[in-house]
Length: 140
Image (cartoon, rainbow, N blue to C red; front, side, top):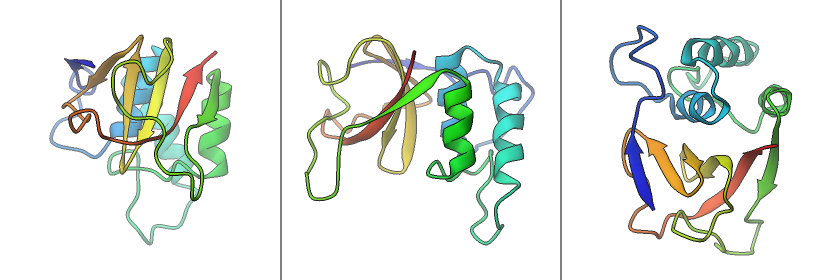
């Protein structure tokens, strides 16, 4: 897949330094919302959780939480699972294996934006086409 290197508007919003904000970046890129607005929404949602693991909009969030799923649905996304327990990997982050459209894709320990078969991220997350896709949020 082709890759466009982008921070999703992070530096333009005034944020500096290295961060584990892949969810925020991917949602911002795919939804077209400003990075700062997505960041604030994710920070607000993660603030309702225990702080035992240090998760935040800057350092990563728990995407399995109900508040996150509701937020994505409010933005117009629908979840599509591509893998189940014991099924093995059927879809990879590779050409032709994902549908066209605007997707926020879940891979191991990372979320990335894919728009019409082109990855938009700070790096190339493909692992030479072998990285397994757990599922994706598709913009309706």
